[in-house]
Image 1 (cartoon, rainbow, N blue to C red):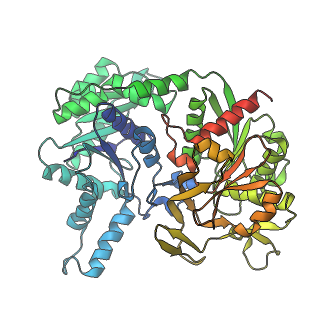
Image 2 (image 1 turned 45 degrees about the horizontal axis):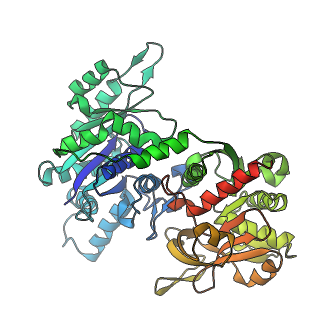
Image 3 (image 1 turned 90 degrees about the horizontal axis):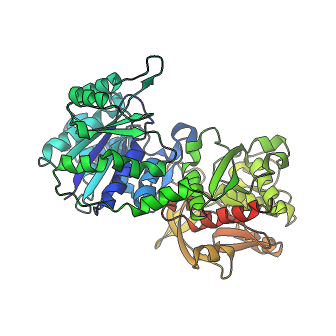
Length: 547
């Protein structure tokens, strides 16, 4: 039966609970334990699938088709454990489940209340799969004191009380601000945060304190005294040059040992940290630098493309180079020539997105990369824009467009090279969708197989002709234009097993120009870079020698 670690946050948001959870999971793995990580989010959306990236960052997608919080990406990147639908839940999903049960009559006429019905639903979710691993790490989104988080805090309080003594540990992440004017590191915000936590029945066993530098022994003892934790359970989480230094940094601070001590696990297995030592060496000792332009529409918020940025970093580590990413707003190219903005970059990446805004700029970026011989990686919408560019400029389809943004009545006539996907095969059954369907959870989501063309660049990258990748889209390149495009050098080098859906295109006689309908960034890890990002950065490295 699993031991449970509950990770909460206080003082302010965005302190790095997800990263701390992921790093702790990696450290427990290094000691030989099996782990699973879970995220419980208090917002009322059923999932983040319909949220703007400006609201909540990127949407991470699991193999089984769940649209989840971006923290699950951290969990996967640090532990290599594939996330599942049962690893992410929101208040919206919890309340939906409760109300569906009420409508069915499952509660036998009882009055439905937050306690016990909502908290019981949360506890049932937490316990899913508990017999599969040694440790279950559950991160509670938001900060203590948030009104929407109260049912989750109450649920984990009850869970801890109901389990045998020593089966649950509570870890609280807070901020230690440094006041430059007085030259002091202030512990009072953390004291107040712990006081708030204790007022709802939760007492932290471990304090993880974000700070710009080390915690002096005097402040550490003060925190231990006023927050009622052991001094060696006050863990400093200092600012780092790279998030991939976190496992080693937390180990030096004694986080994994403090957790094992809290559970009474003694003697503790010694950790094998060679993987993370290699990761740190590769990221801190690059042998060169490449510049990559990401031409997108959510460039004001880097979290919108979090997995892409991390996958590029992994590709750089595989090639012993630092990848310097610059964010370029695709809308600029609607008005201006892209050349002055893109010259000097060693490679160009066009990521996914939804809606018409910025699409013409992405098409121009694809044209620049194709005609200038610059390595190009188009992901999801980035592939579709590359196909539309080739259709317009190579296959004599000057009115080529997409139903996603050209279907409105009264718009000029166009050739729908990209169309709304109405049906596809998932496993052993057919899935059907209409344009008028609800938006949430209705896309082609999760892992699907693809078959690669022998001798293609993608087959060379993967070292195989059969792959499985994660999807998140509702529009698809129309296969009926394949012949016309392939005559002009745009090869359909990856297809769905039934041959109906294009998965990958690449430009013949180009150094490296690949578009993929799926999201390879979601499966990349620092110790196992995705082959497409590895080869994309390698192509950028080769190009850097020519620029």
